[in-house]
Length: 292
Image (cartoon, rainbow, N blue to C red; front, side):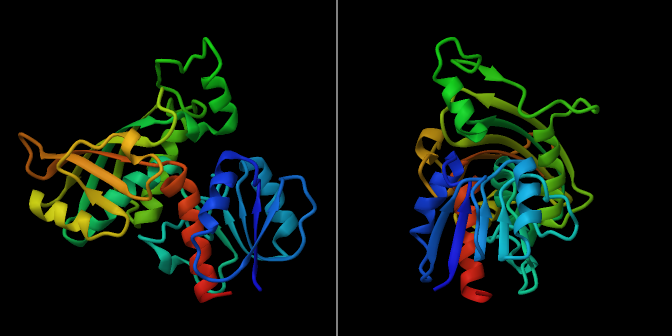
């Protein structure tokens, strides 16, 4: 039987991935490891680790693990490493692919709403302001959030990641460069602003999207509802409703009052599921079905 490891199994994403693996329909055996454990040969493994550990572990494991799926940001901008959302670009994985990167959680929700529209529109610019849940910061941030007097208690903190020389945060730069790579749109302009909010789970974004063509709102809704794991609702959908769900939800769609080729909308989704563990599970299932 094929073996698939979860390395970093005790973290927030690692624990969620253990539950996600139970949904895979192809027979396989799950092996669980800490990031400092001795790891044997495996058919595939998911690294639920930070940048430094992913870089170290990949070098240690690349010759004894068939396929490695990395959840960190370390390899995402390497041109030789596919950055994969299975609903969008599964064709970037081939039988010869040995390392696969899974995208940033916030970027994932954004491109899930952009990709289906590319069938009918040439997208040129996107602005988003994120409202990111505490769970996206991992176990330590969740513990801090529940500590009396936490900065995040009843608050919005416009800083996720570290501030770079450009003034952008590392999280905002992920939104720019990962969006371009996943969608294959190297010239699309991305204007991000990322904010941590006092919501325990499920990220949200307010999005403004521009295309060369005028948007037809009925067509946009139709394209969204035809796309896997994406749903448009005429009702307001909040993070409380999205938490625990596999679906990325869009609502509050409207056309700009002055520019018909601009739309505005709100999205929300479970950052631990589609933004992380669910996406990894989908990649592993694809590997099991096609290449293992």
